[in-house]
Image (cartoon, rainbow, N blue to C red):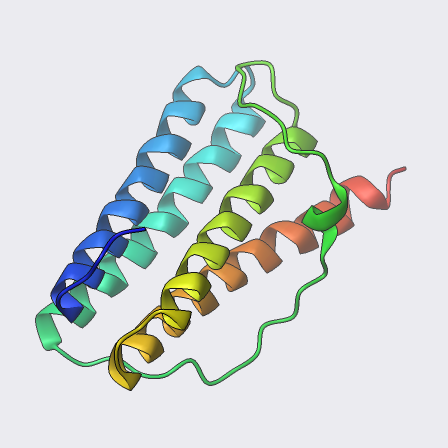
Length: 151
């Protein structure tokens, strides 16, 4: 795991991770076989870009808040097998992929919070974990609404 010497190091790491997510979803959108799936991936990329923009704003202003609210976890991704991204993915597959990706990001930021050298850095990691948790919840709700109810 990375060693961070400053909050700027943490923010740079998180900004880079968000850009990787933007790139990942943008690439999937470019190879999607249907317009519906392309639209979903484009929306996911947009959400990650908003998150990146928030992080850049935090870095420029030098202030951030502690994670205050607890985000609901439906735990759907805990019971769904991970899949690989392919051009032939269904809408269900895209949601599964997104849930697992956001869950991994949440776990990373939570683990980094546990290793934080001070309260400010710990709060920053918890804020980032909370954002990833919100994204995961969105995908879980979508999965519940459009996949589980149809089956």
